[in-house]
Image (cartoon, rainbow, N blue to C red; front, top):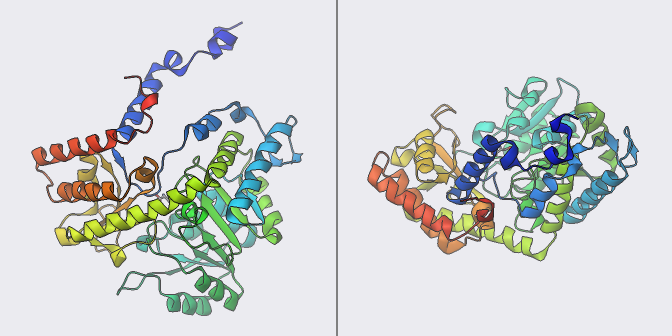
Length: 426
Ligand code: DSN
């Protein structure tokens, strides 16, 4: 028998089989452990979620739906998928939940596939004013195959204008209206979109990829009473594996299931679905409500501290887990801001601000969020310290000695809130 097929060879650990990959994973673990992760779409999963993701369920093909598969040997994974769906329905108060989309874009694509024909009109928030790629960006399938009418935010306060949403809907009669965002920190008024959709007979899709964990924990209003379909990723505020899902009313279940498989995907990733089940169990616990509330409190505290220290925040604050700093008043671009924060161990991402004069590769803003720091156990008092680090870094571009002092402070703070320390070999 070839060595690679022996039981002994298959049970060797990663460190022995592939020291190169092992050491890269160690390096990334160190980066996460000793820095401040502030990209609002990132979070840190539990050991239980990691264990489910790294399980033998990755070996199983299970095309189809539980109880109706195109493969034998699915009785166990059927139970896994049913458990995940049932927990999602309980958590969000929905009638069905399809667990199979591999990511948020696939979840949105399933809704397009189920209800639209190429050339139909859709409405979504402009990408450069906080929207998402899959809500109609010209470089994405959603903008290439459908006619897009994009709504934006008001110049005065950078908030979505309900009158604009209603009048664009009346004028263009879209088949699908999408609410949801990647860089919009305020509460979205879901009812406005329901009313606009009803006026023109459109489907209303709420994409809560960013807010899902807050919705689940009761810290952000839920679109479930208003939307026909709700899509989300599961790895942001939800704190689960990197994946997506579609939920909604029973009347739409058949069309969505068919659009996901065989419409868009083949075999579902059963190890990820198991990890989603674990995540839902965690999110159903009373602790998760406290977590969601703290995420928002931390973001509000961080925003208030940054404003106090002279920075400008888009829409002057936040109702969620994220905020976008507008760096124009301090003459720093988003690109430089991201790089200088990176240099001190704070990870954020450059982001356009509404009506940004800079191209998207440069941008005028940096987007930050509190989900990952809150998972580490940080609270409002740490946010004040983090705000000081951020302002010191942004106002000392090029001052190496100052930046290395900030870097030391960032590492000291991180060490006080251990994360995956037990995974590091040194
Ligand atoms: N790309 C994600 C984000 O960072 O917000 C959205 O899918």
